[in-house]
Amino acid sequence: MDDDFYATIRVVGVGGGGCNAVDRMIEDGVQGIEFISVNSDHQALSRTKASTAIQIGEKVTRGLGCGANPELGQKAAEENVEDIAKAIQGTDMLFITAGLGGGTGTGAAPIVAAKAREMGILTVAVVTTPFRFEGSRRRQNAEAGRRKLEQYVDSLIVVPNDKLLEIASDDTSLDEAFSMADHVLQYGVSSISDLVAVPGMINLDLADIRRVMTDAGVCHMGIGRGSGESRAATAVKQAMSSPLLDTTIEGAHSIIINFTGGRDMRIKEVNEAASQVREAVSPDADIIFGAVIDDNMQDDIIITIIASRFEEEAVKQHAAKSTQTAANVASMASSYSTSRKSMQADEQQSPTMDDLPDFLKPRRREIPPVTYPRRDSRPGGRESFEGIQDGERYHRQTGDVLERMSEQREPRVLDEAPSREENPAPQPAKNKQSRQGGRVLPWFLQDELGEDRD
Image (cartoon, rainbow, N blue to C red; front, side):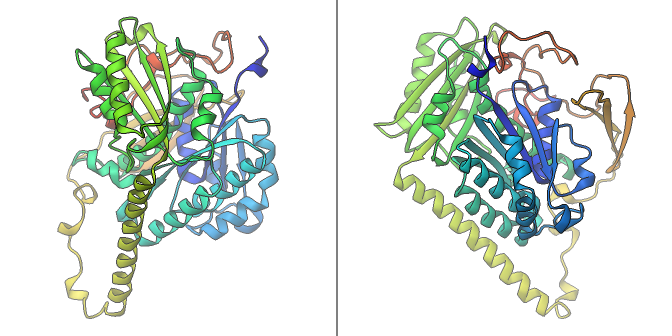
């Protein structure tokens, strides 16, 4: 059958955080999606695993990055906007992923979104906002970038990095914290793209996604997983109120709810879970239902929910949260300015080590080396391995394909992972590979979604 009958989905990673998320998706074997990395930092871009890499702003940045300056990031993207347009030509659904707060991601992502909107492409942005410890400047940059990005995308999903701290353990390292943020971007994109790419018993297609996500503004995206007697109830509760988002589905007018389970998935449990969703949303909500039978799921059920077009009261509550956040940032900035003026007077009252978050305090323990495989998907590419020893990174190249080995936590595969051969057998249809049974959950989400962590 002609490939033109299937949706063309592309993911554009913008800036350091966005490009990291793209690399993780490639490493995890996400198929049916084309990946593009966009960055102003030439050195960082040279390490991307995306088949298409676009360096922006060579004239204004000389390939050295934007130095946390969003205005420079915007100028860099404008310099190469036609290169970006050429790369996304013919796209049916475009994901933009970025970490807000820096220069390239914050300044360039709205330019990419504006061009995609001009080209009539359904565009969804999945972004993170900075950790509080990153300072007021990055948080102010992120808030300004979020407002600008929202003007151009059809749907916007915002993941506050501070939410990660609520589920992180006390011994989570700084490197692990930023790795968690990259994983969240990756998981947000793949969870939505799978709705189109994976065929189902009750199928969802691009038209369904368009119906819910076109000109929708801020969206809620949640995913839950349950097993055992109350598996559907457990999964839908997790999906309705994600621990990683400020949003819930309350008051939404447009809903997609998709069930993935084995052949033992019962109509009664599906109905009960769907009823919980219906009770939480607007009485006249447009609810689109999908179901996928995956023999690898066995006793598990995965529920994915996308909610948009919230009632006015719900929007006000969300705006109030954003306003409060902005007020907190302004207060922090004011306090910082005052303290700078009286720095000498306060010198004897400088913060001590006890004032730092636990995960930022130095620990008297040796960190074993960890090696992560990095697959270069381009023709003739080789395996790249990144090692971490006492916080220092090194790279080495090898022609051999080694399996991932780590003495720390490893993400658990829900069921048998799909083959990752470099030359996989031809698929029957583009974008239709079933990946639900082999989905790899980030280790820090395994507890939240019903997995026991090692």
